[in-house]
Image 1 (cartoon, one colour):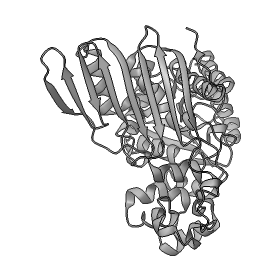
Image 2 (cartoon, one colour; image 1 turned 90 degrees about the horizontal axis):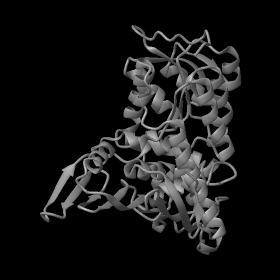
Image 3 (cartoon, one colour; image 1 turned 180 degrees about the vertical axis):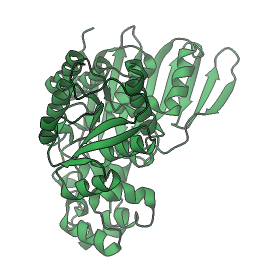
Length: 425
């Protein structure tokens, strides 16, 4: 990189980070990076005044900008940028900061369409910068353990995989019915917004590219025709609230007093930490709405069938109608099988018939608890890559990240057109 605002010499000083988008994900990555002592945030671009103030309180020495374009125009001396804007606003800043020579930590999904995702990958390649898309599940201790078992040959050759993403009934209502990812035209299809993690994870475990995709799914339940006759537009007024699984009153008031749940999901609703403040936010904002009276259109259940180069297959199920818990996976090989729940795995040996249960994961499955350790390990890997000038520390290069996104768009095309989609090599 020839840009004079980026110094290749990182020895003896913390890495300098720019933060573009100080919402939940950007805050998580930047705060952890600074807490390690290996990096400091030197500039922040955040248009929301409350989030900007909170970000500046966490990083008081940072310059503050209300728009990423103003930050890019100034192009301060720094080593990398964390981009965690809304999904539809990833492409332009990612391309511009790549052109300016900054290494990039980019929240998933890369972009909301294939053209923009390819623009980002090409920009990073052409500029010679490292691009780490936040496929955090690759970095968990659980994933490392599963990958080691598969790569050791203990299961023989992998033949098929069965993978479940249990979104959770209240999480679906929070993020994908009432929240920011409820509409495809404002975000992305559900499969990309929620499950690009999973499509990437399965390919990482199998170790081969996808060649064929088919998919089925729909918005089945969270629809106006399923609204009970007595239901009101807002949960606070509803006579059915106490018996409704999707009660906003129960969900958000129930977060009070729990630091983890106050951090998420309550922080998306309001900064208030009193019952009165939460109820005011539910009355005035989108999160108090009846789940049958929202403007959502993303699916609430979907299955994806995958065929890999070499003939291996995988089935993936994403569904709202589960407890909120870890993904569950079964891997079937020629010499053994693995049954995992995100924390434990049971390996069955076909020669001896013996079963061994191992504990591989420890933390919670969600963003509020760091994705099972994946958030922290991703940031560590990104900082390592920059400090050592070694892109192999990042577990997915731009082409690999692009592949999982292309798979998701192919699955959506299959779902909408009732076809099998073929992906070229």
